[in-house]
Each structure stands twice: as structure tokens, then as C-alpha cells.
Length: 27
Image (tube, rainbow, N blue to C red):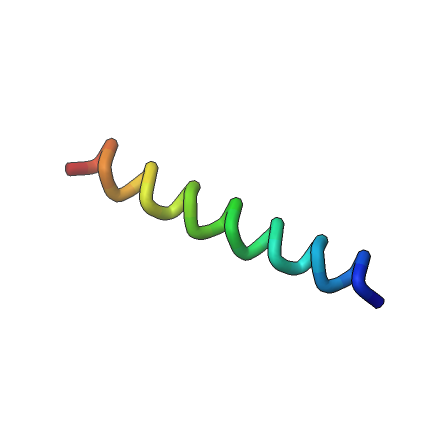
């Protein structure tokens, strides 16, 4: 259960990081 929560957090963090990177590059 803790492993699944960690994976979910990593996916959300990577998605947020990629979104910010995309916004910065398109800026």
C-alpha cells in the first residue's frame, strides 16, 4: 500500500515537473 502511494506521488510529481518544463519552454 505504501509502495503504491509512493508510485502515485512520483507520477504526480513527474507530471507536474514536465508540465512546468513545457510551460517554461513554450514561454
